[in-house]
Length: 415
Length: 105
Image 1 (cartoon, rainbow over the protein chains, first blue to last red):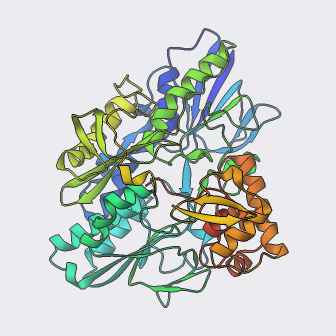
Image 2 (cartoon, chains in turn blue, cyan):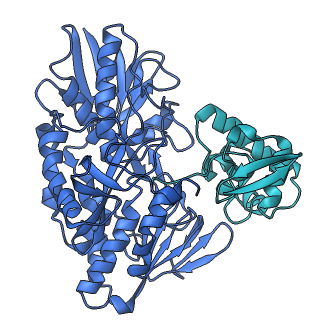
């Protein structure tokens, strides 16, 4: 018997497993390893702090998201023994693999920033990338009546790179609804050189910051957090005071990636851009947040990658050459508050452009522009996630990005 | 779009001072790019960082982030801020003729 072992049953791993089940030739078995009994719908974490989402709607038993034919081992991974082609589990059991798929995601690492953890963590300094963090932040926001709220991205890359901006847009909406917007300052401290870094998006969306009264502290690389004084200090010794801090801490890959010597300086796995094969190992594929790719760490990316990885696993079994099928394609809804949202669609080479998606000229979604339909799309997406994406049902969305329906503003060419 | 005169050639830059065509980069051009960014002459320490960034980008297919530079180039975070003031990741990329480190939007 030969084995395909998938490490991680989040968005990426679940989709690959569900793609592969029923398609393997006889003599091949499929196993997936994940210690967590529940599958978390991560896009919902953004809404929890504002009381607009219920925790129970974001969780499903792992056994329900994995379809029949996928054997699930509910254990943590200690390490991968690449030489022996074995995965060592926490109970010391060794799983042999012929093909390994790494879908172990990314995690926040607040401990990487001096002073971020401490008594103030989940009191005056928060995250919304974990269920505990988002719930603690909901309580803190409910008690917050006036002062300075700072959203700080510590360093790139992060999961869902637009989430910090969405958080600020929703915070503006939330405080407006509570009638205290004039008593709250909203500040975005980012290591990038602006809230938007791509020319077309920057020109199209810059108005949002002004309209919503969000101050931007750019090129701010957080060196330390002084929880007592409620101050962020950058490496070049600038200070940003806060009353309530919403931190997007440093992200890193799963701990076993480091223990196995598979990762880079943040334990993300160096990965071929188009075939999704690990650069250093020809029997290991990588997808989702676990890669070091310059594509976004986002569920849509994992979705577009999952078909490519499943296909390349089957081609490897059949002794065929790999397809260079992934083009960096990503699309993301961006909540802009007031019941509206934006949609962006882009890849490695093409920045987010205005237009319509998925049907050229019709939409129904507007690219790089606010609309109510986009917001409904974001809400409907949860149903699609549970019922179509995770089960890997065929969707009428090509995995490669299409230029049809997009237009490049003439002035951006020379920018 | 702007242009830079270096070693008798006209080199095109984008609106933010980055090379439009990374293949045009030469060590002499790095000095001119540094000057256009308001930096003084490049020291050995600067070159240690620039060389690391170029080799790493050639290997990995993307401009290295600040953490990667500080961890692997042998130059500490504090020093990087002295050498390439304000935004060392962005400025080192610009002088090394690499694309600006970007987010998705």
